[in-house]
Amino acid sequence: MNMVFSLLAIVILIFIAMGGAAIAGLKPVFFVVIPCGAFAVFVAGFIHRILSWGRLPVPFSIPTTCGQAKSLPWIKCDYLESPPCTATVIGRMALEVLLFRSLFRNTRLYLYDERPVYSSAKWLWFFALLFHWSLLVIILRHMRFFIEPVAPLINGLAAIDGFFDIAIPTIFLSDAAIVLALTFLFLRRVVVRELRYISLLTDYFAVVLILCVAITGILMRHFFPVDIEEVKTMALGWVTFAPYVPKEMSALFYIHLLFVSVLLAWFPFSKLMHMGGVFLSPTRNMANDSRMSRHFNPWNAPVKVHTYEEYEDEYRDKMKAAGLPLDKE
Amino acid sequence: MKLYNRGIIIAGIVVFLAAVTFPFWYDRGKTIAPPAIELDTPAIQKLADKRCVEDTAFMRDNHMKLLASWRESVVRKNVHTYTSKDGRVFEMGLTGSCLKCHENKSRFCDRCHDYAGVKPNCWNCHINPEEVL
Image 1 (tube, rainbow over the protein chains, first blue to last red):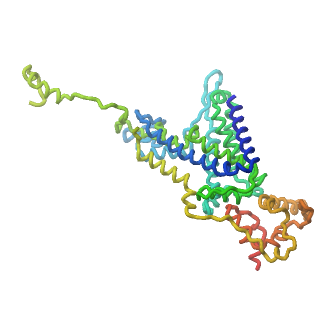
Image 2 (image 1 turned 180 degrees about the vertical axis):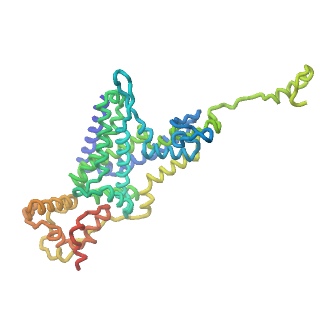
Image 3 (image 1 turned 90 degrees about the vertical axis):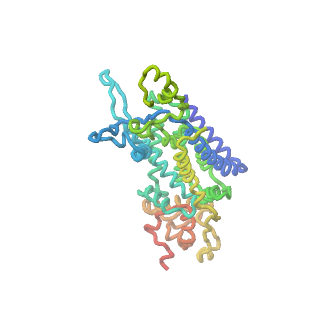
């Protein structure tokens, strides 16, 4: 049911975009107001979410470790799995952010001879990694529409991405990879019974929305070309604060742009915020140093204490009279 | 409310802002005009009827697909003539047809291709007419 509703949301978006394409008067809305508004919501919402997380105290030292902690000198410390200091935490975070190390440890549980058995399951890790890196390459390649002159780095990236020079225009490997990876990630939620049970509307929506962005982009590149000079002039209009409304654009371009705008505007309110959140996970970004330095709970109210020195000062005469030993005479 | 780890949180937000607003900094203060392609080559000036193979809007969007289909038609099917939508007949060929009129690669092809960051592989085989002179 969740899946049906998420697909329904996509269809509604397509109809909105096609409606926009049919009415010429709505061009400034679809080509300036919606994309710029979506970008503003994305930036402001993202910062708001990060600040709201930054205001949450971390009461305990809770790094999740899976290696030998730093201990006696002859016991070998596993620096990346149980980082004792900031530098090793950075190493561990880099592995997590760039290579999804915790997903790599994903296991599958199944019954063998009526006994539960865990086995390694790397598919999710592989396709998740493939998807995220492809998305990064695609976003960087799209910079060619936003910067003039196009930086050599962006052209170089496009050249590597289109290395095999298949077809005209060249098929980008990242385009093929992202469709493959997203199809896997979507089917995984549809086919696996347990995952279908726990999948929410937004889980499907996120995957399908990005998949639709990729597919409309590929359609425009290889099957129904659009005037990309107009597209770039419009994109440059946004970033130089000189809005430009392009001439005739196909409905496909309206759909692509609306999908991207919806993705950007929805981003800060969705689970896609793991883009910023991954850096703020206490289980990953804290050092396992609880035996070396004390972690203070910021919640702790100031406690009123009565030290022994104060106690002795208060009762010195009485203690002396009773013949009790005193620290200070 | 108190912001914990203030330094690192603010630093992270600054990095995020710098990344997403990169095009704004890169293009700041520029007024970028869309590329102007030059169509006044001697060959075009001599033409009585200044029309390309197909209409301008079609050529702008689809020239790469047209050229790719021409290549396939000539190389694989040995068909050398193209009949346009309005019935005119052309010989298929980049050097033989397109470049006869559009001999100014640097002021025609490259203007838009550089602007859009496109590197077509035409020139791996075809010679740039400007270099012949």
